[in-house]
Length: 51
Length: 467
Image (cartoon, rainbow over all chains, first blue to last red; front, side, top):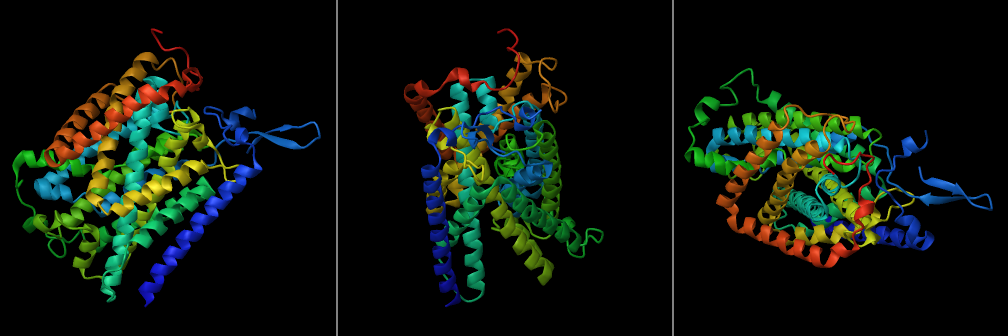
């Protein structure tokens, strides 16, 4: 019984985490402009930029 | 912090979102050792089946030499290429787009498959525990999925928390090996450990030792992943060499202790087949405390490895997206958590599907071979790097000694390991070669047109010598 319950709990938690991440990713996509989200640039060192 | 500009209405609007620079050498150590340490808990012992106990020790040291070369070369090149993507970023700066695409794929495949294998181990461990408590036939799938999703969530929420957690669980897993070493009373040979009785000559001669090289990689596979953190460490020139080299020293100690403990407790015929040799060793001591500790160590090492693999695979995928090797959609950074969240999300179903195959052997072989291809690239890469950008042309955070000996040694040892792999998994070796050739053709004819070659070279280096 305990192990069966643990199995269901694992499925449930997995589903919750997956849904949470997908909803968050969708919200971020709605809230921010795509150009901003993909604006990361390689080789830009923020610590150096502030000097 | 997010770079901001002040808009006309006085509000600060984000201009650019980069990955967060919050990591230190401890996190780099946790990333590298965390990925690898599971190989001490299981897998390395298959080398004993190929070459006997002494054959495995020789493989441990020769492959240790291979990875020391990898760590030294990686530390030097990465201390100048402070970019996510690690060896992928090195390849695009030093060799060219096709090599970079292949190296990026090696990394993603190696880490995603290792992650799947780690999650399978967690599922199998829980199945064993359930069996010991009288519940036979527990389905491991929900625990495989939960492991992957739980760790993906951790990675999604932020790199600092992810690698701090990895440091804690990796340290516990490493300490468990040290405690087991003390527990078998090394100062009292013949009481618990019986090397004099158990160690034999090489059962299959020197060809067995060569064959053992493939599984000797388990002792260290993944330490090169430290350089994936290059864009998120506060001081890449210091933190990457320090974290990588201290990680390599940790692994050399852990590997030697692991071999010594296990080979003194089990005959090579059993050790070569054992699923969880360190846990079995703890059972043979008769100490319940050591058994519990080594079970926890085994579980934690698998979780730490999967956690680090998610971090590394997502950074490679993200970097390739940023350079248009893949759709740029994957290059998105989460504005709050500052992680490559779309890459993390995309790789979840890939890892789960590998995990659902249940084929631990095949999955790990594909992972090892992808890693080996990456190491072969690194030896050629550093020769070109030193030739085109000699020591006086770029400031390096670390300069590896005795160049070009480490590169040549690495190339020779890679060749020997290919031969070893061919002996045991010839079909897999040829299949993976065919896979990468086909995908390279696809890249050349279809994807290369989207790559912006001029934008890729981001490091403030002078022109290469002879340009």
